[in-house]
Length: 578
Length: 56
Ligand code: HEM
Ligand SMILES: [Cu+2]
Image (cartoon, rainbow over all chains, first blue to last red; front, top):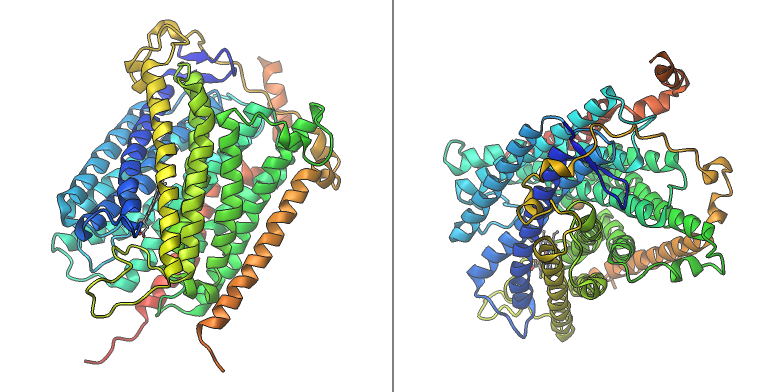
């Protein structure tokens, strides 16, 4: 019985069971993004001082739901789809134990619904971080635990698939780089989920009265092993998506497989230690611990990100130059297909992540400087650059790529799709930059009223801070429009898009199996080992193969250095000594 | 059949130790869990746990 089909356009193989799981997880993710986006509009309109939409208690409830739904549910559902894609499709292997994968999926749905119900019940407005001694409804924690166990099952199904592929010899040599990246994401996810269990299960027991006390400092240490590492799943996975898109669209091959894999190895070793950067201002933990985990380990992980940030555009540049776009430093870039939303998404993700997210992240991760921006709106500014401009836009690009390939539907509204990454990217860049600016002036995050009306211990921010929050508000509205366009285009394509295959019906778009007639391959041909690339052969010259990328990297470095010193200057002004 | 297996055996011989580490997801999983558990979690928890309790 045939179990595989081959996409006629890309040549990718899809295992029947795996592809249904990819669809179901991706759709569940997009639904969560949609909910998160509606909530984002409410949040951002409340933080826009001139609008100040919601009353205080609703604001905190909606903010909790926005964080949980976007950061946890949207990201992880989509990551499950990526794992199944990287394990099964890219390795041309059947998925191990699809039943377990479905069980995991169902648990994730149940957990997500439970937690959201607890939040919207109004008694769990504890923010996504749920710091004790704030107490949410027990079902808030229980839902998260069930969701996490479901995701853990998905991770093990992925690892199982690696074993199956190896035993059944579906590929030659080592796994492809994108699959390697997904493995790194999976490993980080397993640590993340274990840390989550370590802290959320006791907190659940505390919420039902079984444990009497949880130490807040201890909670923060263990919670951030979950909170930070979960962001690093996103990073590892979106870097893999950059490599994938560069490969599929530009035919780009990594400049050096070895270097890229070594960079991923640095992630495995060091990325999670950087969790300590969230606790820079916490009392009770030594500077040795903070400095080792951030100033040493974190920078090695940052180094890895910089390597990826260099090799992905470098690989694209080499591929483009081979096609004859050799004029000047940047012809290869100017003549890229900028109206292809897959391509524009990848670039916006890469540049936004590097410049806005990367630079601000390294600056914030410096123990001394961290104190000026800790708990200000600078922090949401930073992570909307990483997790929205970086990860979310990369996911969006991948979705555009997969609509015809995986879902077998033609994309509706292609003109709107061309604009969507730019609109969303612009809006979110405004949010990121202006939140960071307002944060530098001290505006607090998670704060309903920056005017402190009627508050005996008020504080008066400079008028500029109000202006900056207003501009961020406008950016947020633009971002929500861009996000809504994405949801309309993708969900619309799944429902109304022209079928590229007669079996791809409505229900099939959402994970119901396609008729057997769609599957024509018993077992795909073995994935051949990639030939050693030209670039890898002549070491030392690689930098000059991609001069444009080299220039871009220098611009990044200079921007970073300038911004870093500006922040030390700010710090020196915090306490006047004269 | 015998011919099909040949390239594999050759591969096995040429694999460098570095490549063997990279190709073993379970070893990587171990490293990826052990490193942060020791340097971040255990060390951090020990520090918090050894903060003296304030006298009442
Ligand atoms: C439509 C675009 C979005 C807009 C306009 C937006 C806007 C905002 C605003 C204004 C805040 C509140 C900052 C504060 O008062 O502390 C916030 C918080 C947050 N957002 Fe977004 N956001 C968007 C999309 C996303 C996405 C896609 C993600 C994740 C992938 C995300 C993750 C978060 C998180 C984790 C928080 C922090 C919640 C907390 O402090 O507990 N946002 N967002
Ligand atoms: Cu972090």
